Amino acid sequence: MPGLKMPKAEEAVLARRAEIVAALRAIVPGEGVIAEETEMRAYETDALTAYLQMPLVVLLPETVDQVSRVLRYCYDNDVKVVPRGAGTSLSGGALPLEDGVLLSMMKFNRILDIDFPNRAVVTQPGVTNLGIARAVEHEGFYYAPDPSSQIACFIGGDIAENSGGVHSLKYGLTTNNCAVPGNGADFTGEVIRLGGKHLNSEAYDMLGLMTGSEGVLAVVTEVTVRILQKPQTARAVLVGFPSSESAGQCVAEIIATGIISAGMEMMDSPPSMRRRISSMRAIRSMPKRC
Image (cartoon, rainbow, N blue to C red; front, side, top):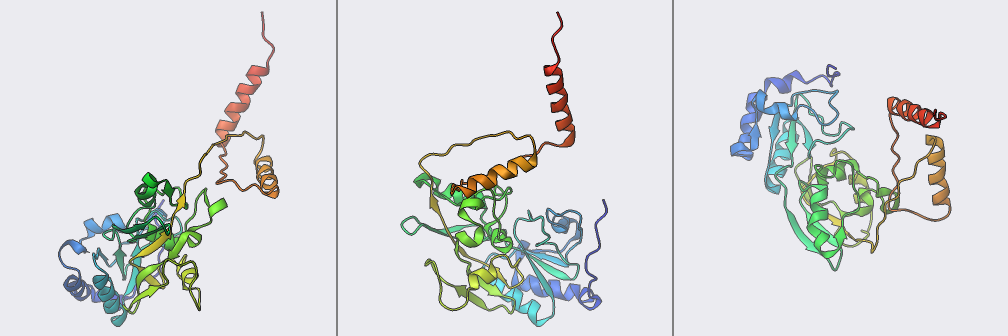
């Protein structure tokens, strides 16, 4: 399937590409700038592969100062910026633009602090969702939001997309498990810090504003997330239903009783499998011949 059309690029920006790349190389030295077409192919889409578009240039900064200076330069020179995590999104949140800088946060990949008494982890945005859970599991803790891509998705991308997962039924989405976005830089390049390890901040709910904004308001460079103690027991139950409607009704009735499971997930077989199962049932129900 060919890629669908992306927004039309600004010719004035494309004409200045060499100038823009040179200026960005001065900010992010060495291998932090990817400008060759063959090397940028890995960044031409995210998991929503129906859209394909080469970025103007790809940047891999390593410090908050570099992120700030890149954003300041792009703001002053009318160049678009698209922040990117692991690229596992299916909503198009990290799709590149032909006339835009793709700002990859993959080198911000360290956990900075684990505070078990306060049940908080301070981490950079390039740490995977599962990486946080594994870093605290030895003390009987875990990070609740568990999107299907948790083995690969970055926590920064989870904040941008307000990601969830099966556990969201009981424990909520990223916004319910993120103490603060922490440090970040807005698109003028100013470095800002929101909140702390406390549950609520005074004045406006900047956490709610930032989480789920797909990176259009600021680039997160540090985040504090809440961790939970693992339950004493956990049991998985697999139940079969004759229809999707009856399965949904069962979920509604369970929740109506006040029982909130850690998670519920429905798996529906494809039509070909359903036909095969029906055929097997029909064969088993046929009378046996002597």
